Length: 575
Ligand code: FES
Image (cartoon, rainbow, N blue to C red; front, side):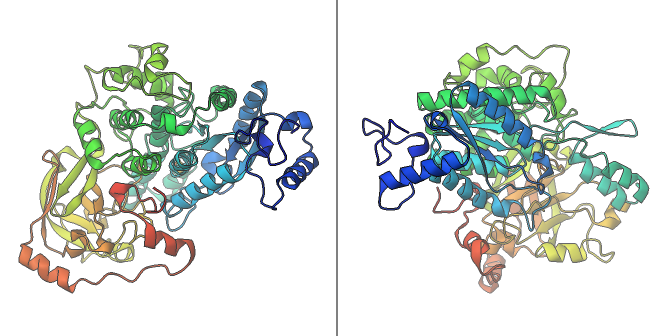
C-alpha cells in the first residue's frame, strides 16, 4: 500500500492495482484507501499481503448445485497456486446455477449470473480472476462476464462425475436418466428398479459425465484457450484436477503480469476453433446459443452459418455418449480435449493465443497423439461420422434458423414428411401428451409452441418432447419433434430446436395447426411448413401476441430485452 498515491493510482500515475483498484466513492480517495486498508487488516491481512497483486476466485459452490459440491477444495488448490506465484487470492461468491434445482429453467438466469460475475469482477479490487464453474449455464455466464470485464481471467472447470453402475452396465447422467424414465413410462421398468437406478445416476461430485452441455462447454472453454490444457475432461474427484487447479492459480498471476486479457484470447480464430471442436465432440446444441452469446460480448461475429460450415467440414471424432459409446472419464484417459485437438490440428487456427501465453500450435506440439489402444477419440481417417454432430436448418418454418443434433437422431427420420400434432405451450403438452384420444401416429411431427426465449420464458430444455404414452407402449422410441425450446445436451432423438423467430414473437412456428404437413430434410438443411401462403397470411392476421408471462423484476427485464436464439439469448444492451 505504500507505493500507491492517495488517489489509489500507482507511483507513475498508472491504473491502480491490487487493493487500491477501484476505490469506494467517498469523495476523498485517500480516506477510501485508508478505510479499505483498515478493513483488510480487520480480515487478518498484513501490509505484505496487500502489497501483492490480488487474484479473485469466483466461487460457485452451493448446496443447491450438487455438481459443484467439491469446489471449495478446488478453490483451496487454486489459492496454493496463487500464493506460490506471489499474489494474494481472495475468494468471492457469485450466483450459482444448479441445473436441476432452478425453476422454470436455469437459462432464465444465465444472463443474471453473467451480469453478477462481470460486475463483481469490475467492482471489487482484483487484478485477475479465476472462474470456478461447471454446471450447464455457469461456464457460459462466466465466459460472457470475463469477455465483458476483460480483466485477466482463467477458468477452472468442475470436471465430470465418474460413471455409475447398475446391473452390470455403466450409467451416464443424464442420458440414462431419460432412457430409464422412458422405459418406466413405457411400462418396461418397475418402480423398484427405477429407484435403484436413481441412486446410481450421480455417483460423485462433478458435472454430467456424458457429452452434455456441461462437458461441451468445458471442452469449448478449453478450445477457446481459457483453461490450463487438459482441464475439461478430467473427472471431478481425481487428484489430477486439484493439480490442474493449482497450476491455474500460478498461471493467472503470470497472466496479470503479462496483462494477458480475454480480449487477446477470445478472437475470431479462437471461436472458429471452438466451433470445430464442438462438431468433433458431438457437443450439445446449447453451445449454438452460448457461443454466439460469448462472441457477442467479445465483439466477434459468429452466426449460425459458421456452425453449419464447420459441421459439414469436421468429422465426429469423440466417441462419447449421447453420440457415441463412452463417457468423459474414458475421454480423459485417452488424452482429453488436447488429444482431440491434436487429431483436429489440420483444421484448427494454430496461431490462436491461449491462456498459457503461447499459440495453440505450440501447445499442441507438446500433446501426444491419442494411443491406438483407445477408442474414445477416433483418428481423422476413421471418424465416428464423416460430418460433425449438428446441422443448421432453414426453411419456411424457421426463416432465421433451427438446430438439429444429427449425431443423436434416428437416421431414418432425418428425411421425414409428417402431419403436425401441435401443443400450444408446456402446460398444454403436459395436459394432453398422454391422452389416449390424442390424434397422433408414429409418423406425426410433434410441435411445441411458445417455449422460446420470450415464450418460455427462458427457453427451457423442453424440446425433447415426451413420446405419447400410447406410442411408447407400441414400441416407438423416437419421432420428429420441433420447437423453439432447447434440449439437454444429454438427450437424443430427432429433435429440431431453437426455431427462430420463436412463436411468442410471431414466428411461423406460431401459425402451425394440427394436421399441417411438415418436411424435415436434414441433408438439404431444410425445415418447411407445407401450408399455402394465403392461409398463413390469414392465420398471421388472426394471431395475437401472448400476454407476457411475467410482469416485474428481473424476469420482466428478461422477456423485454432478451435476443433470439441465433444471437445467443443475451440481453440486447450487453452485447
Ligand atoms: Fe449439473 Fe448436469 S446437472 S452438469
